[in-house]
Length: 607
Image 1 (cartoon, rainbow, N blue to C red):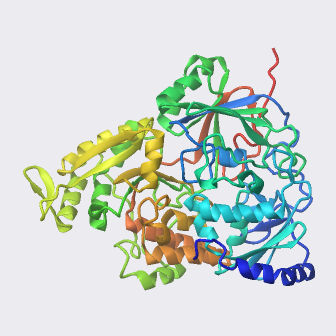
Image 2: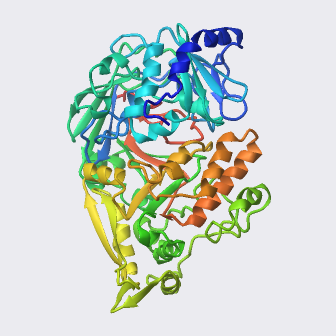
Image 3: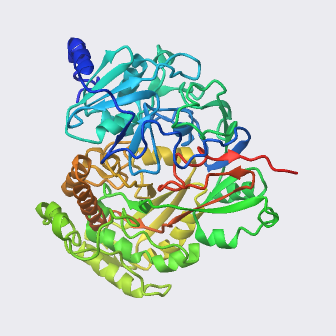
């Protein structure tokens, strides 16, 4: 693909009249688009099923992040921006209903239309859509947004950009995007790209924006105040254009959303206990059970809410960088898994209250099944059987410890695998035939006290194998920079996975991005089997084919032994001020982006 992003741009101008004619002759656009089947909500839906359309407006919510920030542009590689900005301050042509696996409804666009095989998608903008400065959202802004994100945006936008054949205006408020590959999910991904204001960046370098060059968006919230590295305040726009849309009714209820930054998680928690923060997400079940007896909880000023969900576990754990020669061998990676005494670590860190992640899609029908691959899953993987590590075809389960702190049996197995991989003990240290010491660095973000506790235990186990481990804790900016430059041996990884996995899987573990700076494929996965299963996912038409592809992908990734998985939970835990309320109906995705703070509100308390 050429660097100018739209290699078919010249043809777009020539074919403009034809596209207009084709658009006028085709069927009328729809209000929504689903990945599979039909959207659940009708054209006349009143609000999202998990929103309260009568929720009061007002009040504030204060949340906390660890680390800091040196950018307020969440769309570029340069700098570190608060992750919440992308979702609170910017909108796309369509928005998600988080009570369906993957369906989109009109937001900036009033309608959507696709080709017979989704080889193209056409959007028609709402005439009332406005940026926060009051200017109208135009087709030119939309086309420019796709262009600039593909050329100067974060690398996560590049994959989609490379799949666009042409993009052209087809009417006063409409545009059509034609794709150059078969990929049924692309039409939905197009609907989720952020839309920015072209005129703001005339004569400026979008990819090299300074801290005070905040992109103008169309969303209900705008950044109204900030102190670099310390806090960001977003205020609800009183002139927001879309407040009466069904997708927005009962959402974005707070007048103010504030994000405070702290050095580490322990300081952040103390800030919550003292009332600086009004909401806190807890991921540690042991802490939830044992450390929430402070006075504000006892008085009833703080409420502990447990939110059930039906989403896959995703993958949380510690990724091994296979670009490092010592982690290239699957036997070494299996040895790392054997040395990780999960039962003991889990008992020490979480009190044993959380179950281990057993696969990338565990807790869902998309997860691989125990034992040998069967039926469609086996047929999908069979062409790659000779190239995948053991376990993909016959079944793979994570090593289980012997129940003791020293984990002797697994350490013996790990030592045998390391010997087979060319490593042996010499004067108490693990070396290869060239005399190279087996030593690696774990990169941790400052404030990640849980990971530090885990690796203090893990380092001691690895030392018994003769492996030297350095734990490096760096600030938020350094961590982001080193992660983007792939400058690590082992690193924490968290990949939330949906009930409709698709093109994001290419970002997470596709071969195309394995060697690219800024990639989300932290492990450096380069597997024909993985790439093929992702292709099958995004092009499946029948639900059964889709499920088989997901289970086959799960097997290929688990057998690859790229990550040391840790724990998961079937509930989300949020402690919050009693004045913060949420609707009774919970979406199938639970507490994920699009729920808190989106559908929460502040309830005035009677004195």
